[in-house]
Length: 304
Image 1: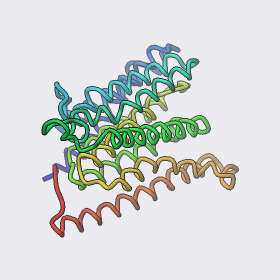
Image 2: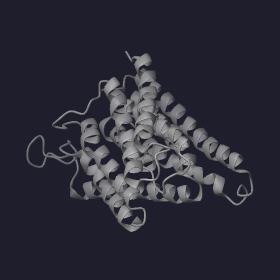
Image 3: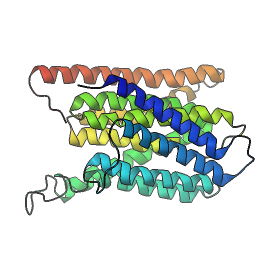
Image 4: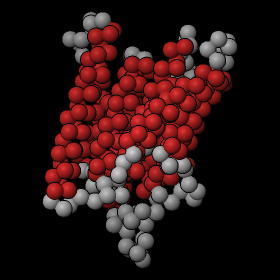
């Protein structure tokens, strides 16, 4: 039975740790220091996610045999490292994006490593996918993740990191709420500390008079959202259509940039941005809940 108190505590703890670590390391009144600011953001987000996962008894395990462990041990540290480079070298944007594309390219292979889809676990030739299917799935995964990342980064330039943080938080929570009943409860739980850490770091950033050119919230948030959607699709019963909708839903934040809304006050555009994404996520989550309840009623549900 789900421990709802623990589920509520995890994002709160993650938010508190992320915000406090960011403030303690970056020090709002400590004068400009690129290294300190980068360490504060990366350390805050990382500490928030890991502490929140620890509360849920999801500490990273070595060797990382399961998909959740590979996310916590390999994929999340890589995301934090890439975003640290982007913060430390803001003038080297091409290099930062090259690293992000590389990260987007290895995300799916890391999560699928030694799985029944790509590995001959039952003997030679027993992998579920042939070479063509593997290339197709991995290629589409890279295109979607990198495409969403690039479009949201462009939107961030037009708005701000703070404007996108609520979108990332809501999207992560919706992914968790959809994946948990799909048969992968533990995988869906990952959304709680990810959302909490992004929210906590973003709130703490208001203490700083000047924001850095880059911060890791977008990269870490998208890698987390992609991971939850991906493992829900391939390690549970989340339909492909729902996984894709969840991954693409943050792009609806572009709605506020339509010509008919550009002359509105900033607060109104923020409300449109968040409201549009929230409405879409509510539709997705509601549809998923109805579908999963129907499957359970007919005896087709599975759990993990």
